Length: 289
Image (cartoon, rainbow, N blue to C red; front, side, top):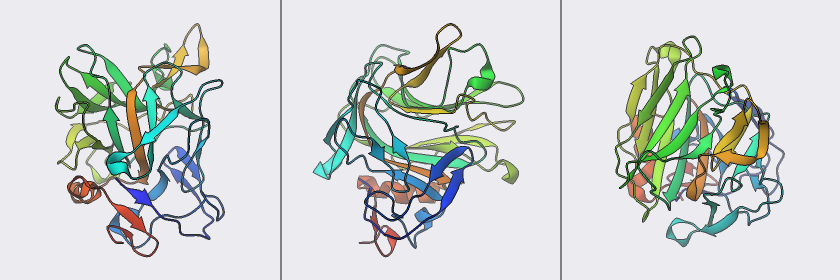
Protein backbone atom coordinates (compact mmCIF):
# COMPACT_ATOMS: atom_id res chain seq x y z
CA UNK A 1 0.00 0.00 0.00
CA UNK A 2 1.52 3.36 -0.91
CA UNK A 3 2.41 5.32 2.21
CA UNK A 4 4.33 8.55 2.57
CA UNK A 5 6.97 10.01 4.84
CA UNK A 6 7.34 13.69 5.53
CA UNK A 7 9.65 16.14 3.83
CA UNK A 8 9.36 19.51 5.56
CA UNK A 9 9.65 23.07 4.36
CA UNK A 10 7.68 23.47 1.10
CA UNK A 11 5.28 26.29 0.27
CA UNK A 12 3.73 26.16 -3.20
CA UNK A 13 0.36 26.80 -4.84
CA UNK A 14 -0.61 24.56 -7.73
CA UNK A 15 -3.73 23.58 -9.72
CA UNK A 16 -4.81 20.22 -11.11
CA UNK A 17 -6.38 21.59 -14.30
CA UNK A 18 -9.50 22.57 -12.42
CA UNK A 19 -8.90 20.80 -9.12
CA UNK A 20 -7.29 23.47 -6.97
CA UNK A 21 -4.90 22.17 -4.38
CA UNK A 22 -3.20 24.35 -1.80
CA UNK A 23 0.21 23.27 -0.59
CA UNK A 24 0.64 24.60 2.92
CA UNK A 25 3.62 25.43 5.04
CA UNK A 26 5.67 22.78 6.78
CA UNK A 27 3.79 20.87 9.45
CA UNK A 28 2.36 17.45 10.24
CA UNK A 29 0.16 17.41 7.13
CA UNK A 30 1.53 20.22 4.97
CA UNK A 31 4.56 18.47 3.53
CA UNK A 32 5.97 17.42 0.19
CA UNK A 33 6.03 13.61 0.24
CA UNK A 34 7.77 12.90 -3.04
CA UNK A 35 11.21 13.62 -4.49
CA UNK A 36 13.40 12.24 -7.28
CA UNK A 37 11.10 9.69 -8.89
CA UNK A 38 9.26 9.52 -12.20
CA UNK A 39 6.04 9.17 -10.16
CA UNK A 40 6.73 12.45 -8.36
CA UNK A 41 6.41 14.49 -11.55
CA UNK A 42 3.06 16.24 -11.60
CA UNK A 43 1.93 14.87 -8.22
CA UNK A 44 -0.19 17.60 -6.62
CA UNK A 45 -1.96 15.83 -3.75
CA UNK A 46 -1.92 12.63 -1.71
CA UNK A 47 -4.28 11.39 1.00
CA UNK A 48 -3.14 8.52 3.24
CA UNK A 49 -6.35 8.58 5.37
CA UNK A 50 -4.54 8.03 8.66
CA UNK A 51 -7.01 10.26 10.53
CA UNK A 52 -9.67 8.68 12.77
CA UNK A 53 -13.43 9.06 12.48
CA UNK A 54 -14.86 12.53 13.20
CA UNK A 55 -11.75 14.24 11.83
CA UNK A 56 -11.09 16.03 8.55
CA UNK A 57 -8.85 14.04 6.20
CA UNK A 58 -5.67 15.96 5.39
CA UNK A 59 -3.77 15.81 2.13
CA UNK A 60 0.02 15.92 2.16
CA UNK A 61 -0.11 19.24 0.29
CA UNK A 62 -2.74 20.83 2.53
CA UNK A 63 -6.14 19.96 1.02
CA UNK A 64 -8.79 19.01 3.60
CA UNK A 65 -11.75 16.67 3.10
CA UNK A 66 -14.74 16.91 5.44
CA UNK A 67 -17.36 14.57 6.83
CA UNK A 68 -21.04 15.54 6.37
CA UNK A 69 -22.64 17.52 9.19
CA UNK A 70 -23.71 15.23 12.01
CA UNK A 71 -22.20 12.06 10.51
CA UNK A 72 -18.95 10.20 11.09
CA UNK A 73 -16.95 8.27 8.48
CA UNK A 74 -15.01 5.47 10.15
CA UNK A 75 -11.49 4.13 9.65
CA UNK A 76 -10.24 0.55 9.34
CA UNK A 77 -6.88 -1.19 9.17
CA UNK A 78 -5.59 -0.85 5.63
CA UNK A 79 -4.04 -3.40 3.30
CA UNK A 80 -1.32 -5.45 4.96
CA UNK A 81 -2.10 -3.93 8.35
CA UNK A 82 -0.06 -0.82 7.51
CA UNK A 83 -1.86 2.21 8.93
CA UNK A 84 -5.51 2.99 8.28
CA UNK A 85 -8.00 3.43 5.46
CA UNK A 86 -11.33 5.24 5.25
CA UNK A 87 -14.44 3.04 5.42
CA UNK A 88 -17.67 4.07 3.68
CA UNK A 89 -20.84 2.36 4.93
CA UNK A 90 -22.87 2.62 1.72
CA UNK A 91 -25.39 5.03 3.23
CA UNK A 92 -26.25 8.38 1.65
CA UNK A 93 -24.62 10.18 4.61
CA UNK A 94 -21.32 8.29 4.54
CA UNK A 95 -18.95 10.33 2.38
CA UNK A 96 -16.15 12.92 2.39
CA UNK A 97 -16.42 16.18 0.51
CA UNK A 98 -14.77 19.44 -0.48
CA UNK A 99 -16.58 22.45 -1.95
CA UNK A 100 -15.24 25.08 -4.38
CA UNK A 101 -13.27 22.30 -6.08
CA UNK A 102 -14.06 21.77 -9.78
CA UNK A 103 -13.08 18.45 -11.26
CA UNK A 104 -10.09 17.87 -13.53
CA UNK A 105 -10.21 18.57 -17.26
CA UNK A 106 -7.49 18.48 -19.88
CA UNK A 107 -4.93 15.85 -18.88
CA UNK A 108 -4.78 14.27 -15.45
CA UNK A 109 -4.52 11.04 -13.45
CA UNK A 110 -6.09 9.83 -10.19
CA UNK A 111 -4.82 6.69 -8.46
CA UNK A 112 -6.26 4.96 -5.40
CA UNK A 113 -6.40 1.66 -3.53
CA UNK A 114 -9.88 0.33 -2.78
CA UNK A 115 -11.71 -2.73 -1.49
CA UNK A 116 -15.47 -2.87 -2.12
CA UNK A 117 -17.72 -4.70 0.35
CA UNK A 118 -20.88 -4.90 -1.77
CA UNK A 119 -21.57 -6.43 -5.19
CA UNK A 120 -25.29 -5.67 -5.33
CA UNK A 121 -27.75 -6.36 -8.10
CA UNK A 122 -26.93 -6.07 -11.81
CA UNK A 123 -26.60 -2.45 -12.90
CA UNK A 124 -25.97 -1.08 -9.39
CA UNK A 125 -23.37 1.73 -9.41
CA UNK A 126 -21.24 2.91 -6.49
CA UNK A 127 -19.31 6.16 -6.91
CA UNK A 128 -15.86 6.16 -5.30
CA UNK A 129 -14.96 9.73 -6.32
CA UNK A 130 -17.21 12.11 -8.22
CA UNK A 131 -17.88 15.63 -9.43
CA UNK A 132 -21.03 14.49 -11.20
CA UNK A 133 -24.45 16.08 -10.67
CA UNK A 134 -26.85 13.84 -12.60
CA UNK A 135 -30.02 15.14 -10.96
CA UNK A 136 -29.76 18.48 -12.71
CA UNK A 137 -31.34 19.15 -16.08
CA UNK A 138 -28.27 21.15 -17.10
CA UNK A 139 -25.54 18.85 -18.40
CA UNK A 140 -23.01 21.64 -17.93
CA UNK A 141 -23.23 20.92 -14.18
CA UNK A 142 -21.82 17.43 -14.64
CA UNK A 143 -18.21 16.42 -14.06
CA UNK A 144 -16.10 13.23 -13.90
CA UNK A 145 -17.50 10.22 -12.07
CA UNK A 146 -15.31 7.29 -10.93
CA UNK A 147 -17.56 4.39 -9.99
CA UNK A 148 -18.02 0.64 -9.67
CA UNK A 149 -20.75 -1.12 -11.64
CA UNK A 150 -22.18 -4.56 -10.85
CA UNK A 151 -23.25 -7.37 -13.16
CA UNK A 152 -24.75 -9.23 -10.21
CA UNK A 153 -21.63 -11.39 -9.72
CA UNK A 154 -18.64 -9.05 -9.88
CA UNK A 155 -17.82 -5.37 -10.26
CA UNK A 156 -16.00 -3.31 -12.87
CA UNK A 157 -14.25 0.06 -12.45
CA UNK A 158 -15.44 2.89 -14.72
CA UNK A 159 -14.67 6.53 -15.48
CA UNK A 160 -17.44 8.66 -16.98
CA UNK A 161 -17.00 12.20 -18.36
CA UNK A 162 -19.12 14.75 -20.25
CA UNK A 163 -17.70 16.39 -23.41
CA UNK A 164 -17.79 20.18 -23.54
CA UNK A 165 -18.98 20.82 -27.09
CA UNK A 166 -21.27 17.84 -27.64
CA UNK A 167 -22.49 17.23 -24.05
CA UNK A 168 -22.02 13.55 -24.89
CA UNK A 169 -21.19 11.16 -22.08
CA UNK A 170 -18.09 9.04 -22.63
CA UNK A 171 -17.20 6.05 -20.43
CA UNK A 172 -14.22 3.70 -20.09
CA UNK A 173 -14.46 0.55 -17.95
CA UNK A 174 -12.42 -2.49 -16.95
CA UNK A 175 -13.86 -5.99 -17.13
CA UNK A 176 -16.13 -7.45 -14.46
CA UNK A 177 -13.32 -8.96 -12.39
CA UNK A 178 -13.57 -7.16 -9.02
CA UNK A 179 -14.82 -8.99 -5.94
CA UNK A 180 -15.04 -8.09 -2.27
CA UNK A 181 -12.18 -10.08 -0.76
CA UNK A 182 -9.07 -8.15 -1.81
CA UNK A 183 -7.62 -4.67 -2.28
CA UNK A 184 -7.32 -3.29 -5.80
CA UNK A 185 -5.38 -0.42 -7.35
CA UNK A 186 -7.48 1.80 -9.59
CA UNK A 187 -5.90 4.37 -11.93
CA UNK A 188 -8.07 6.61 -14.12
CA UNK A 189 -7.45 9.77 -16.11
CA UNK A 190 -7.35 11.62 -19.38
CA UNK A 191 -4.56 11.86 -21.94
CA UNK A 192 -3.22 15.18 -23.22
CA UNK A 193 -5.66 16.62 -25.76
CA UNK A 194 -2.86 18.53 -27.50
CA UNK A 195 -0.89 15.31 -28.03
CA UNK A 196 -3.71 14.06 -30.21
CA UNK A 197 -4.52 11.12 -27.95
CA UNK A 198 -7.90 12.45 -26.81
CA UNK A 199 -8.60 9.50 -24.53
CA UNK A 200 -9.91 8.72 -21.10
CA UNK A 201 -8.41 5.62 -19.52
CA UNK A 202 -9.00 3.12 -16.71
CA UNK A 203 -6.50 0.61 -15.30
CA UNK A 204 -6.93 -2.06 -12.63
CA UNK A 205 -4.00 -3.55 -10.69
CA UNK A 206 -1.33 -2.13 -12.99
CA UNK A 207 -2.79 -3.59 -16.20
CA UNK A 208 -2.61 -1.87 -19.58
CA UNK A 209 -5.36 0.79 -19.47
CA UNK A 210 -8.71 0.42 -21.21
CA UNK A 211 -9.30 3.60 -23.25
CA UNK A 212 -12.20 5.48 -24.85
CA UNK A 213 -11.65 8.25 -27.42
CA UNK A 214 -13.07 11.71 -26.73
CA UNK A 215 -13.69 14.39 -29.35
CA UNK A 216 -13.57 17.45 -27.11
CA UNK A 217 -12.45 18.66 -23.73
CA UNK A 218 -14.46 17.29 -20.81
CA UNK A 219 -16.46 19.22 -18.25
CA UNK A 220 -15.02 19.72 -14.74
CA UNK A 221 -18.44 19.97 -13.09
CA UNK A 222 -19.90 23.44 -12.61
CA UNK A 223 -21.07 22.85 -9.04
CA UNK A 224 -17.41 22.76 -7.94
CA UNK A 225 -18.07 20.02 -5.39
CA UNK A 226 -15.89 16.92 -4.97
CA UNK A 227 -17.27 13.89 -3.16
CA UNK A 228 -15.65 10.62 -2.04
CA UNK A 229 -18.02 7.74 -1.33
CA UNK A 230 -20.84 8.90 -3.60
CA UNK A 231 -21.97 11.50 -6.13
CA UNK A 232 -22.94 15.04 -5.07
CA UNK A 233 -26.68 15.05 -4.50
CA UNK A 234 -28.15 17.65 -6.83
CA UNK A 235 -31.60 17.93 -8.36
CA UNK A 236 -33.72 20.57 -10.11
CA UNK A 237 -36.16 20.70 -7.19
CA UNK A 238 -33.89 20.02 -4.22
CA UNK A 239 -30.89 22.12 -5.21
CA UNK A 240 -27.56 21.31 -3.57
CA UNK A 241 -27.85 18.99 -0.60
CA UNK A 242 -24.46 18.68 1.11
CA UNK A 243 -25.69 16.07 3.60
CA UNK A 244 -26.77 13.36 1.16
CA UNK A 245 -25.07 11.51 -1.66
CA UNK A 246 -26.13 9.54 -4.73
CA UNK A 247 -24.74 6.10 -5.74
CA UNK A 248 -23.13 5.61 -2.29
CA UNK A 249 -20.04 3.41 -2.09
CA UNK A 250 -19.76 0.60 0.44
CA UNK A 251 -16.13 -0.27 0.98
CA UNK A 252 -12.66 0.95 1.86
CA UNK A 253 -10.45 3.62 0.27
CA UNK A 254 -6.77 4.36 0.82
CA UNK A 255 -3.78 6.19 -0.69
CA UNK A 256 -5.53 8.61 -3.03
CA UNK A 257 -3.18 10.44 -5.45
CA UNK A 258 -3.76 13.29 -7.93
CA UNK A 259 -1.42 14.05 -10.83
CA UNK A 260 -1.33 16.82 -13.41
CA UNK A 261 -0.62 14.77 -16.52
CA UNK A 262 -1.45 11.27 -17.75
CA UNK A 263 0.58 8.43 -16.27
CA UNK A 264 2.02 6.08 -18.88
CA UNK A 265 1.32 2.31 -18.76
CA UNK A 266 4.86 1.81 -17.44
CA UNK A 267 4.29 4.35 -14.66
CA UNK A 268 0.97 2.72 -13.74
CA UNK A 269 2.74 -0.64 -13.51
CA UNK A 270 5.43 0.94 -11.34
CA UNK A 271 2.74 2.38 -9.06
CA UNK A 272 1.16 -1.07 -8.66
CA UNK A 273 4.56 -2.69 -7.99
CA UNK A 274 3.33 -6.27 -8.23
CA UNK A 275 0.49 -5.60 -5.79
CA UNK A 276 2.59 -4.24 -2.92
CA UNK A 277 2.30 -0.59 -3.94
CA UNK A 278 5.03 1.96 -3.39
CA UNK A 279 6.49 3.98 -0.55
CA UNK A 280 7.67 7.57 -0.79
CA UNK A 281 11.04 7.95 0.89
CA UNK A 282 12.21 11.21 2.43
CA UNK A 283 15.14 11.18 0.03
CA UNK A 284 14.35 9.42 -3.20
CA UNK A 285 10.59 9.20 -3.62
CA UNK A 286 8.59 6.29 -4.94
CA UNK A 287 10.16 2.85 -4.97
CA UNK A 288 13.10 3.42 -2.63
CA UNK A 289 13.47 3.16 1.11
